[in-house]
Length: 58
Image (cartoon, rainbow, N blue to C red):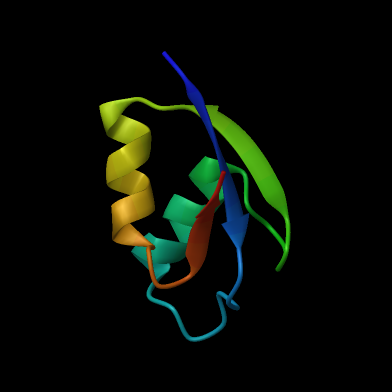
């Protein structure tokens, strides 16, 4: 499988608790932080849940 880089671009302040937990599960704690994950269906589902807070960096 290929890897993807995910970058948090918006603040988690004001987001519902489940979205904050999703960001924590992805390893994102600060704005402009970039993490790398395998491109699995579970990771893609988490990205889809917080798509308004993150971007996928190529």
